[in-house]
Length: 621
Image: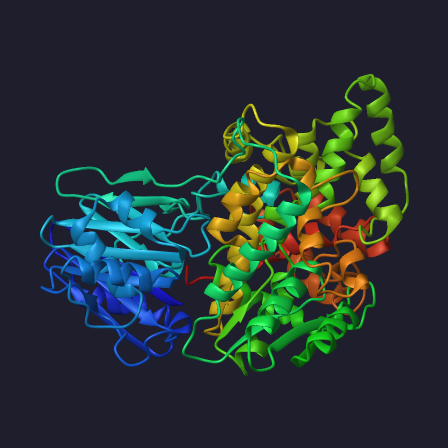
């Protein structure tokens, strides 16, 4: 992992500018830094050394120095690509993965370069012979890449702060960002909280050529099942799944530095650890984080897996004072971020980095193998669409009067499901994901949210038009929640500590294979992740295989009523709170009051407002 940054300008690009950008990215690459400089373009990189510790420091170029490349991430098939380049007469000076991109850029068109790469990556390549800058982002958006354009200048960076470090880039808030943030808990790709700063979409390259507007070109989209796909027996699917899982994990165990794994005790991380243990001649190093609140604590299950596979296991406990990290997290995200599980993810990354430089994680299992209970709920809602609308509306009214809102308990889950009875499956899933329900969102805004707030959601849904409901929900999840919540959370939390996190369950080959399976191999009735559970049935303890999904949550509901009550009031309840200049103060006060008195549980909504307040207070943006 690394940080990349730079600028291209027909009027000239200065090396001093990229140094200011790289100063903001030291945490992403603490081991070295370097820049490739040409009259029109500067491409810089801070490096976290993981592979090729001797010859891999930047700048990296092709043989004649006409192409310079900076890479953030890992290219898992780089050895095969390097062999092919040598067979075609190329001379490679390093033994790492960045150099293969430099040679490919000299040979191929931009989309074909990105298409050849398997891994997680964001790269910048200046091709001096063509006078062309190519920015590429991996298929799912595991690695971030932002840019701004103005006149003849384009500025890019791994984080928004690296783009803002260029003095040409204005620091203005995008007026469309706030409604979208209150709707989703993040600003959907390609938008950001900053006017003019965009994110390169996953599966795309951005090409900048002389005399032309920058253009985005797509080289990959999430796979959808082919209508003509031949049926596959479940037993054969289980056999193939195990082989693909093993290959995906093995590809991600290549490193010249210490390596370990996150272990929550859930099915996904346990499966990764089980396969790692089978491939490793040494005990796997595993890392777990937990809570004193038993409803959030998964340490007993993680210990069960650690004992099963004889791992070197380390634990850490999160306490309410961890909320002090929120200001640091907002700095790393560069914008508000409403997912409170960023706190334990940050602490887990900090703990893990004390022992290893690379960690494998189980992220993506729910997206690939259909693990979310909301997929089951959406299917149930689809089946009751024949019920008269008046009846479904009445059900939502009943749900609103049910006491309790802890979605980790049966009553809380039932209440949240029933509250969506009058919605389409699409809108129900959005409501189940939202940190703030639509009524409160509109109250905070003082008016109904504009249609633009959900444009990205509708665009993502349209991409799978004609497919079955489960396929559409899986595709939607990859294009929205995975892209803009889960992946940024892990990237920012891990790279804050210079830790590289790899996700085998999001392997390209595995995802494309799963897309061809019958939907019942993934979800049947209330049984989620069928093929994954079956593939790991002989490896994992029954208690792990039978567990319902718990999620990586934080007890903010309780914290905001007890240990952190005065802190929350001081941040949001003060007349000087910045959110009150952007939102309706009365609505903010009602949220605080209802939560404080226990009338309702507004923990996620209040956390969303807290990170917004911290963002608005920062003067350095």
